[in-house]
Length: 150
Image: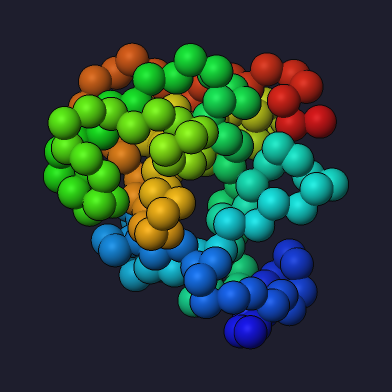
């Protein structure tokens, strides 16, 4: 079992197979290649995307189906290849891939979700990326309904 220090959760144990690999990092965080998805039951449905490289880097996220149950993915063929997913169709969020929206809490307490560039994880191989949509069907500042995070 491996162990990592975190700013918000203290020292946590994890199995190497629990690590989510971002082959290209995240936009503006390209050097961040390994994360853990932490799902404390007290914070459900919030998911914490904890960097293994920097203890203080932790993103808040929500499963996209908790925000918009019928969310439609639009992942490029190149991104599908990176995730080792079939290139002939879009995967189904929640069953074939984990689809997470990074959330931000504004100064006035509003919770916004980035639906324009969700985090997509292939649970079969633990590879992930931020799939930036080329259309503008969704916003990067989607207001999250009250009750989703409580």
